[in-house]
Image (cartoon, rainbow, N blue to C red; front, top):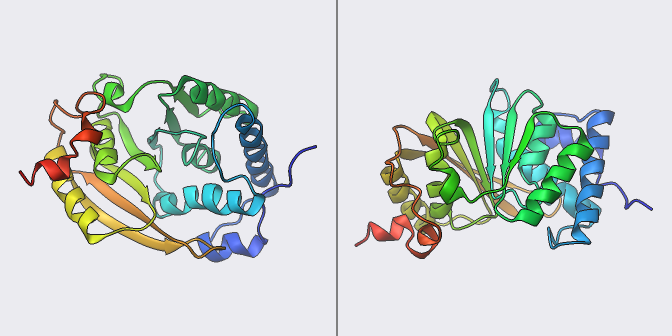
Length: 247
């Protein structure tokens, strides 16, 4: 028997996003939920499986951070370290005119994402099984994206090092965070200067049920990223850019 569908009162969508998913979109959300539950039986995709938590912390959170940019046309988007498919799959469902690439280094998770894409009938999604450090130096990916998304992936300066090389000049990285501290912002500002970007948005909001604090940090690419970035596998996490500049 299928698990209960992740739902909240219809008014919650309109009150928080100014948007109401139609019946077809709600069925798609439910199908994604069932796919994640099934996938969780084979591998550890997410600890968030209760229906309302899933709605709030996966579906709603994925869309809320992107929502100020939803009117952009014909965007090519990459979700870095997609994992169970968040935020990339909800974004692809709602923004069907966008092309969304789900980048996932773990082969089993990439296989799960491919099954989800097929089950949901998504024709605007491609799954790439590779590491961000490698993809960032591949000609068909480097400087090829309008939007780069990174959620629950790594420290924020590491996310920026993965994201900025993939963006076109003028492109935007959206870095999903929970709490946000002044120290993090200082380190990120240092890192993105090296990477050819600048922080252009710090969007703070609360989740609609738990009222937990979330932040979405917008980094705009203002000039080409030096070819040395991203650095080789493991180096960005061991030697974060923001800290290196202190020396």
